[in-house]
Image (cartoon, rainbow, N blue to C red):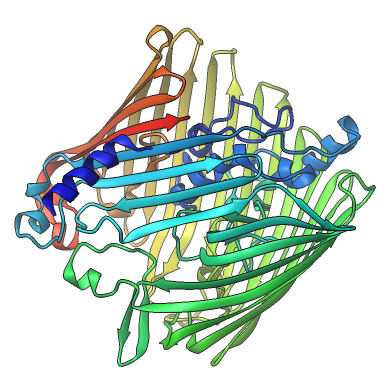
Length: 639
């Protein structure tokens, strides 16, 4: 066993998979200026909380370079391009739709090993409560050609003993295959996959563009339609899906049989866990304790991409069966072993506007609910855009695979939501303004005499003073924001106001700087204020084919109520969203070297140092200390 662990550990440090993928832009379908990690930072690096998952987003961005798509779907897959912009580009500059030009074949490996620097300081390791060692391993393989892509992921998380608990992968047909006449086989995925149709009420496995980055078009769900995935999240499926093209229409069939972690008591599912940690005996006992089978289909029809009025309409339906009866929570009041969903969606694009509509019906043994989502984006010119969005998600609506703008559709149940966004470019290539206003009304009061209301106001202005200097100011006000936990308890956040000032200087000579100051004000029954100041220095050494980044952040917040959310990119393809609270320093060092085209080595070291001892971690890892650091080594090989 020791030899096996040593071999697997060595493999974990040697193997690594992924290409620094480029995102799709209007100018060039393989624009290398948009890299996955950089685009993810733009999406996440905003003040306040976010429900968008970094791992899912990074995987989506990595897959853009290998996207098998054409026309509007290919252009809109990018977070920077709205439906209206994509159609305008097709009609004004191209007589034929964009098609993917990726005909290369390659084999990519990504592997990283990470560990806390002082694991024995944690009681879980010191007392042998964890089954395995502190080192975590991530090994991903991607092999693709113009016809086929095969990808697999193996990972062991810190504290786990098994190297095979987390195995995911897929094989995907990437090229359309004519069958007979107008009938063709468009795509086939076997293994783990995600679906995204309409605007996500039933299936939302695409990309949620940050509203702070694109306030108007942020209401649109980006997606590949159906795609292989290795993330293994709760809204992914495992089995197979196939898509047929019949002239202007498409038929999608899908089936899934997947196990998941759950607490099963007396032959009844009490809790379904979204996290899949197997570090202790108690966590290991929940592994794959329950399963669900899904079978469904979708039919859609669309006009030509360049038609005067583009229209696409579709209908989706599926049935889900659990292997045990499931008793839900106040948030997801599902009781029984069967869930059925059906819905319709429509997309219309004219010269200056886009309209999206979706309705979905969720039916189980205890509840029958219908949700509605309406959006419109008006873009009269390249530098002006407005959007309106309305959603009605009644209490009891359950959509296990649904998502709206990056938020689980089920977690939005019992609220009516309203959204208005605006994007302006008063000075082209110099000044950009984004702003939105969003508020929600609770439909059925739970835990309170009166229904709750949530408000979110956001505004940001970015000014490029010179080609090297960019200044940005951002304000976000979240009033009476609250969320409901899985147990049904209401956690009130009060009012939180974030103000951020930032300056980025990149002369293109090898060194770049980013300076930031952020202030946070929180109030409920009492008020408190916190702040952070950070400096980031990035140095490129072309002769050595290397890059180094150092980030130092000083922060001070009276409590977790005024904690500051901070996005932190780690090794390539990895990121974290940290909460900075208390008084201390956050330090991160990243370095990478690429001695030749096919090989890259990177290292990442980050941690927090507090001025006074405090409780670090929670649960079995909780301890008193002043610092908490972890390190990562990663290798990327592209053959």
